[in-house]
Image (cartoon, rainbow, N blue to C red; front, side, top):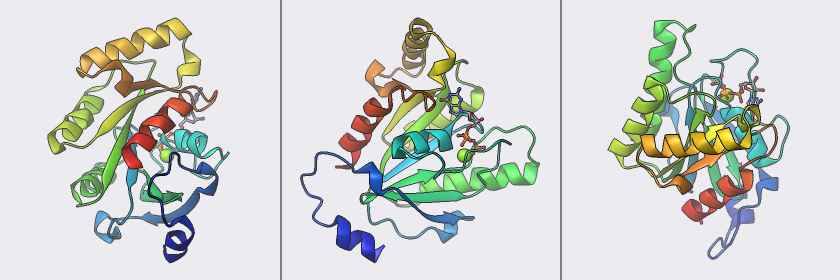
Amino acid sequence: MAGAEASGGGSGARGSIDYRSAAFRAAYPKASALPASTTPEVAILGRSNVGKSSLLNALFGRKSLAHVSSTPGKTASINFYEVDGVVFVDLPGYGFAKVSNAERAAYGALISGYFEDERSHNLVVQLIDIRHDPTALDEESVGVLEELGLPFVIALTKADKLSRSKALAQRTRVAARFDLEPERVIVTSAAKGTGIAELKRAIAEACL
Ligand SMILES: Nc1nc2c(ncn2[C@@H]2O[C@H](COP(=O)(O)OP(=O)(O)OP(=O)(O)O)[C@@H](O)[C@H]2O)c(=O)[nH]1
Ligand SMILES: [Mg+2]
């Protein structure tokens, strides 16, 4: 961290984040192990397999810095990446049916432990699969963010699986469902790079 402070110092009136500096920092198996938060944080939240790690890689412009799982439910820790003085947090996915109750409880505790910790929660990116309406767990997750008063945007993932017109219709639907301005719902595809620039703008606005 000291090195990052030295090289990334004097942030002040920067206009953008240099994603080329993205680096893995640490994996925390328990929320109680999290270090104190000293820099802006952007958390990536969503159900298992929704595309959290893939979206992080798309933001970072890297193929596999964040581990993309062939088997869902495998990001079992809170993973920190540091990008130009901003911490990106890859959270475990919720809602994967095939994990044990004990594992599910542990993932839930990690997620709520992270959000309830006193940190610089600059932005939460809530991921929802563009092909399906929000699940009950997605609704619960957004409800928690609203309850805790955390700033968030929704990223609809895997837009390459739908036509442009269907993707835009789903954006309108999801925005209406959560009573959000349409700008807070971003259509993305990690595979095609769709929406990454728009998401980066939202992140810069929240962090710089
Ligand atoms: N077509 C398409 N597939 C995607 C996209 N993003 C992710 N995927 C696929 O979806 C699967 C899950 O992606 P991950 O990025 O590992 O999802 P995750 O949310 O990190 O999953 P967990 O860590 O297990 O919770 C992988 O097979 C990815 O290749 C996308 O934009 N388009
Ligand atoms: Mg993952």
